[in-house]
Figure 1 (cartoon, one colour):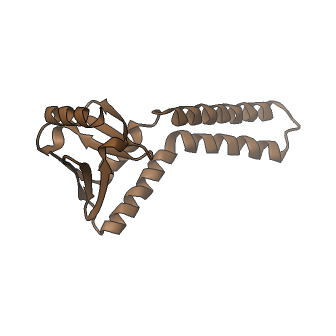
Figure 2: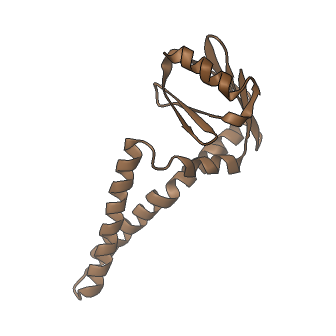
Figure 3: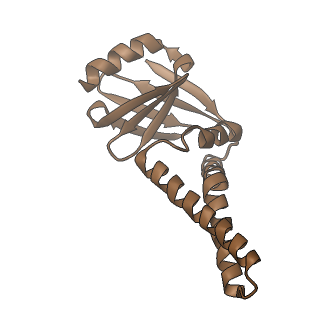
Length: 167
């Protein structure tokens, strides 16, 4: 069974939107930076109302607000853009094929010329959302496949095979 799809910069940037509030760590981080942004906004309002606000008060308020806006809205896109640049520079191409082959013993992931192998017993969980299937392994490694991108086999066959392997 084999799943293949083309990776482009637009594809990777769409991934940044997909899982922004998934997982406990992301939710806690979101809440903390939201509080920081509200604090920054509150400090700006407070500094505007008081006549004796120092320059340091204004700097702190601005830093709180800028950092929170960056972390809440822009960081994931910057990180994904850097990741794309690293991959495209390493592979020497702007687009490449990601192939995940599900053999009887292991999962073989081929990203252009890079090959990685994963054991089925290292699968921690599988999440599905629409057409996207995320397979998470023990070391917080995630493998993305698409239900409609099977070039050998099908989504239904994959579900049966993966169910028998991870039980």
